Length: 185
Image (tube, rainbow, N blue to C red; front, side, top):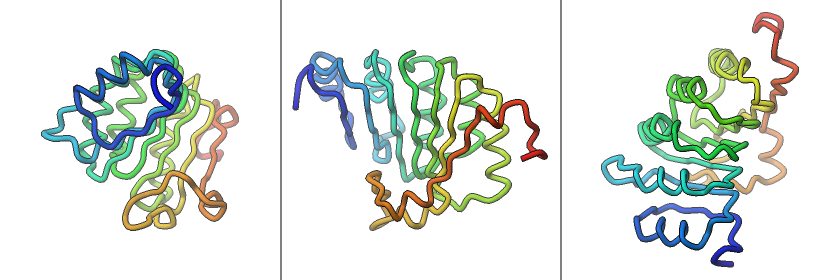
């Protein structure tokens, strides 16, 4: 499908020509997946333009094999996110500190955050991420892939999860968590 009927888009390469074409004709896009791994000189201007230009964007997935890519993009996109965004999915390489700073500064009402970190998740990771998200009033669910190794095929995470991969997805209902201390959990 093309043009204004396009609802979902996945891009590995983002150029000014692609962005301009999408924003001219694809304004009904609600789901966007961006792999920012091969962004030259960490220039995210076109990524920011497409994210900010999709006014009814509901779901945004970011992936990268380099930590600085997502970390830099998170700090740059705080002010351009459309108010319609409800679900943010971050895959592979990112730092919790950068994610925490982003979440603290983010003013859009995110309802769901999905993380597929390229590391094992231990108690320290869980405690840190819960401290970042538990006081965000709009955030309802935090989804974590507890076994990132199962999601790697040829060193690339395949988003279409099989039933086997689904069993490693852990859900934290933040409505139940709010108001409780970490020690009570």
